[in-house]
Length: 407
Image: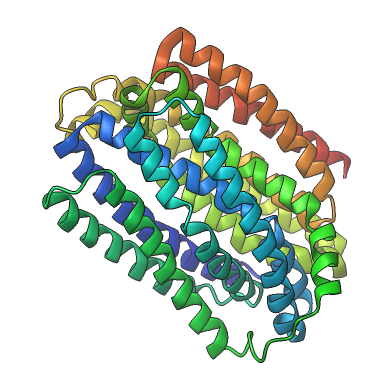
């Protein structure tokens, strides 16, 4: 593994995610400043449900396929078609589960219809995630940039046009489904172009084997998704859509940093997987080096963001009702440090064949996080949710740090 390779892959993944986040932020600012906190709350609920159920439906298969294909490039086609059969089944199951979960949630009728329409995004995400897993495995991250750029730009243009014509919140689901479909089409074309996907090679015994092997990855991926959007779910149920919108206004800024962190860890993951299999000493050296670099970069960023929170919020959000977002951002700014430690060391555990340990850590963190978030929201609304999220990731960072030292 070289620093140049990691830097290049981090740049491409950051660009892919960054383009999506920036264009999504433009859409959120449009919604916030023209429609207010309630509509922003609805949109954040939509994204939370999709993020969680897309990850659950993928069943951990993309991350498993990335690790294995990174070690054996010539088996990409076999893994793709076996993964498609396996993930197709899990996607159908979680589509039904999402419909049922939405039905029992205490949301207004228009929010529920929006979420039911968004269920159609799950099968499209299957194609996107599997083709993307192959591209990550061969470290061709630039194709993800193209897909995210096309998808996010199309969603922004369609949303502004349809909402300005008087469309209801159902428009938000429609454009999201279409955007994921466009991204899936783009990365699938890239995988075909790189000869990663060829003639169909159905192997249902191998599909069943993949499902068994992906159980720990599924648990870890599901916990990742829950930790990243558990705050929105708790806040929307306990405090309502307006409080969710106030919180989400601050969280969108933190999300940019979290996206860069996730891009960095995804860039490191395939290389760490190879190093663990071939040179454990170098694996440990590289692991510690990038941990130190990440912390050195993030600590001053978090301090500056907390200090400038009043100026940033007042600059971006002109609609009445967002003053409380300042205090939320001042707390959330420090979340990124513990988030980085937790995510990075979790990926290291998985690369080192310790997926079960990473999963159990995530379960413990989500369990503690649920208690912390509910308590925080009941005591102090959106600001309490920020404090609960900070405590949750601090707990996760401590656990993964202890497990990594032992491993």
